Length: 120
Image (tube, rainbow, N blue to C red; front, side, top):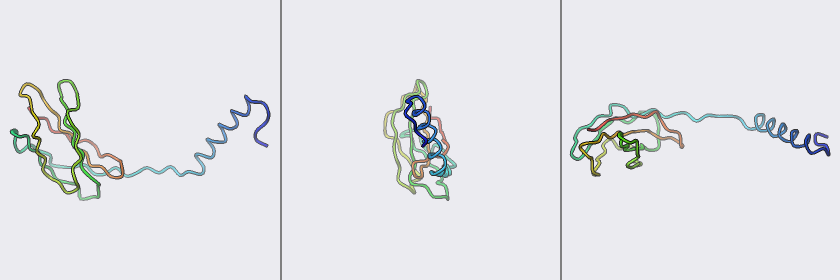
């Protein structure tokens, strides 16, 4: 029998057995990373308007994060429906700060690389 009455050996053997079972029974699979948006550019600064081209490969939605580049504080995060290619930001943009607009496509909870545009 694998487990004996000595507690220090039992704990170690249980740990080894769990690791063996975990890596032999459950296949390790990685989800494919979706392609990012391309051609991201600003078309207007009042209000801030951005346009892009969506990937031709499948994705679930586009995530947009507005980040205050001065202090790296997230201003907002939005989820855009699949097929959207224009984003209007009606929130306040301070003229003395820079903002990053970060775009990522998402597929099954996996995020693409970030595509960024700086405003101001």
